[in-house]
Image (cartoon, rainbow, N blue to C red):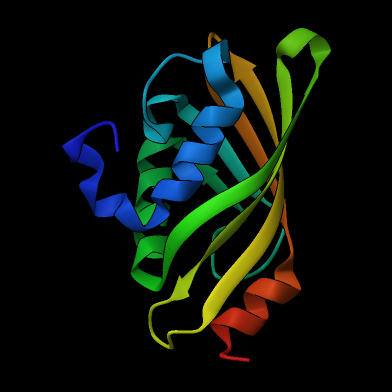
Length: 141
């Protein structure tokens, strides 16, 4: 991690790193939470315990704290990056791999995220994932 101020989020570090890698020099900041705007909108288009819309960096940090209480990621891979709208829109595809802490069950999931950048930060995030894979891992199947 880039800073000890984010040590509580260690369980999501592979996710943070792959997002940071995907955006390269398009954004300013070392850590995921440094590259989102203060008023970012983080939208998830699935129902698995997260709010559908998270408003702002502080609320996003709170949501990820809950995530790391449930899942610990060990890796993230299979990154594909696509740009649109003269680099203001970035689509990233990736996979994460980890463990559901309560059950020890392996967690593997695929994501497609659409990001809109403003002033070298993420202003809007729309997330799609393999809900079935997440449900099976969280349900201990």
